[in-house]
Image 1 (tube, one colour):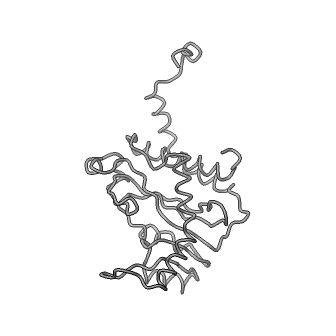
Image 2: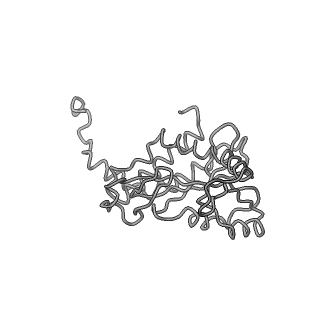
Image 3: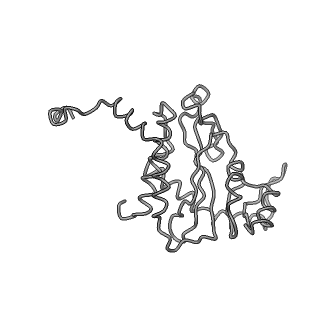
Length: 233
């Protein structure tokens, strides 16, 4: 850029650019909602929903105990899939399955890293009716599953969790768990694609709450735009 300085005499410094970027944090959520309205609807199985969460790390391993960025939302939590503690937030995604391709997000929410996935689900499940909801073992709650089935005709399907002291699941439970996991696997593919395209999980350079919002929702806007216009990718 030093060779083109004369062309752009009023170009702001990097710090100035970051400050300007952070000012648009509040506009990104409405923009994200607007992009969701143009997502394709063909081949969408609206009766099959998938739900899971994705950790977004501001710091992890030993550094997670000393991090204090964006305390308005971020805190320390545990990622079971990585078997590690981290400081940051969780992105909760409810998506509609599309056979043979990535599912389409219908709900996106952000919570602290310590908030349990089941707690996040309870905040939105009252608005879900009919069909099936596939989730992992973190969402296992017999009472919630019974209530959604009875009151909302929503069937929650979750892999079987081993009882305390149980070494192995029996054959029937293993088959059930495998079948459920296969149906919900596309949401894992969605998370892998999202991180590959945007690097959303890695937020170690974040230094403020507004910067965290820009990091998360700015990348989500870009990702959903690519889902809506696959030729752009």
